[in-house]
View 1: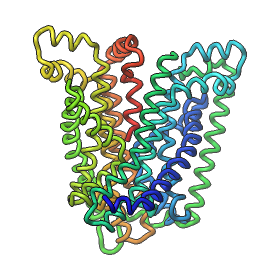
View 2 (view 1 turned 30 degrees about the vertical axis):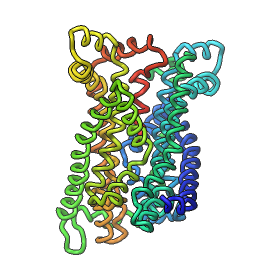
View 3 (view 1 turned 60 degrees about the vertical axis):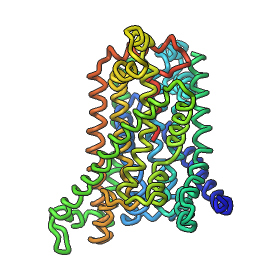
View 4 (view 1 turned 90 degrees about the vertical axis):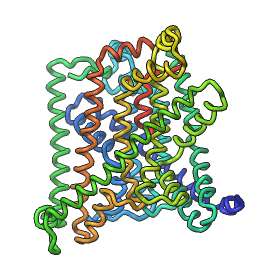
Length: 216
Length: 298
């Protein structure tokens, strides 16, 4: 137990790194995922096709393989990325945006057709219908699943531990090497820091989900 | 053709414009691909490194390369095939305990589920590897089984919440005990209702076996790496493409199965599900709305 307290500064460094990865790639994948969702519902068949290919590939590829691509394969093909957080953020963003896209798309599909018809009736164009009428409503009903995607992202940042980023899980691995007598406590400490992020977020998602259900 | 809420059925003029726009976008995208391909060709990425699958260097035969990859796929599959039934059994236990009437049982069950659900799978594998001294293989199985048990327990609970109350009442009325009602009446319906989610979760589990790469289990990705460190760095790209293709084939086949199963279970079941849930309001999320959340919750 004492060694856990002794190791608190290292936990904190790992925690901030996990948080940094999660926040940066979270924001990026929200942007990219929403863009992809727009592709997938666009009237242009070629855009829809590209969106579908990206999402299907992203959802059926293991995250570790995405990491391997940006860390080991791209450099061998001549594209050198700076080591450390950059490839991790790119890999997490590419992977997560496929899931964000699916959450947003199902949100768009949950908006009643009448809303769009009303928007068309008052003369809005397709871009206006999307940005002024459909997306604001879709985004609201999409918030709980999006929070779930972001929780999954937070947990997925742990994969970066295998690729030279010292975040929480890598910290835990290092700590269990340095305190071989307290391995279970060390790893439970890591688990605690993950739960600090994931459990409140899950509660928030459930709360918003109930709110949205009531407002409908 | 699309039945989107975003725009009404286009007229002939719009359709023509859309077709032109669509084709020009496609042309631009194809142009980008061609540009990328020529650049790759200029960098010499299409040289005889791709022959590694037909006529590999260093005295190896093509069958050596393919055998190693497919043996590794077998190892990936075996970890998944052992972890999945374990997860299912554990999930049934956890979900059953969670519905227990006494708080002394349901409380800890809930806590265990929340704890397992909130942790990364990789951390759980490290628990197995570093704290319990398991071999890499069993650490992978351990992590996958525990984590997915919690997720599947949640899937089962969502399904249970979606069943009409009358099912339990009928069970009680014909004199079944709570356990019998759970086992004989609710469980078969829940499994049937949630089968698509369960299959999707199996795809997630299969994908997560790749974390064995980090833990030191010699599965598909690790084998790919061993292959290219043996043959040399220029073989990274071809081997990666092969492994990506293998994963995509296996997972997309499974995902398609989930869709087919969902369709087989019938559109009738789906509308009934929705109808059942509307009166219960905020209490129980419909499985339809729950499913994406559950699926994504990896």
